[in-house]
Length: 449
Image (tube, helix red, strand yellow):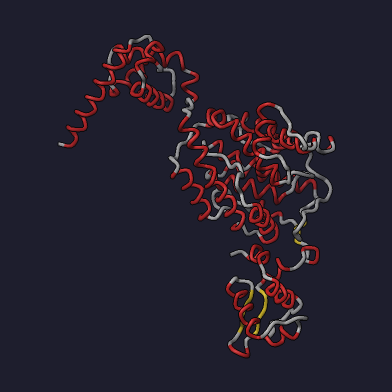
């Protein structure tokens, strides 16, 4: 368990022992420790409390029996100290600067495996980016707009967010700032999805998304601008840089490296943690991190990271751990847990609603013509590649291969009622598909002999 989480689950007696150890820079015996406590428990109780702290990874024991001495672990001492009293931790340019795409890994393999398994166990369906965004656009807009705003304290519930996004109906009793936060998420998410067919975002495009995310909520001069002043983050001793040149370069470097990372889950995590750490803008850096973390996933045709159901405490404390010591384990666990919960729902929605490949939209007319010939001539699957070469000879080799898959799948699953779409008859479809299945069975029987 992580010390930053354990420290928040202490009993009053455990807290008293921790406070006494914080006042002891050197290891102390149990007897010495009890003498420094205002209301020390009995020796038996003290032994039990200290044993529990050792088991939770907060306390170190040196030696045995009466000669044993105790001290806080380094992590326990750090997180148990009030952030205002800790030594400030400055921004480390090497955190992002030293990241090497496809060699450095911020996302631990265990968390990455959980995210991959969530997709595979739900069916593993992927779509090309040009169609995937349209398939889940409305649902994703609502989910991320609500969850990301909720993490910032917004009191809109999920249904009220849906009513606002779909119908423009603001919830009664909510102030205009909360309504604007939801609508701004919608605008920024929409801009991201509209650009999935283009180049990976650079600093300029991210700055435009910041404009949309903070419209009417920030001084117009600050919209989309890399900050020049200091920024404070509560509950941590981390102090982000206020160097405009360093922040500008860091933002460009982070985005360039994320665009080179081949694993979409690693790229997603890099953007989430990196943007939060950099704090390039005067406000909403975590919101921007949550938004941008979806860019690699959507481009890879994977379910998005909506942050629905994420455990807020590990998420926030995980960010603090990354700020202060560069540890990503706690944050990764929170992200993987949320993704495991939501990814299957998105895949199921895609399975129910078939989404056409980009080729099907661009070549709809010629596809209908080819299918009409295929049904009327009773062309089996084995003859489809030749038909594709004849009708779609202008396409590149990869697209012709995909087109053969499209024709084969569409023909084999076509209902007789759809015959009119292809200039064929119901009998054409029934007889062609029956003959094709017979040919496939004969082939399989021959292969087994």
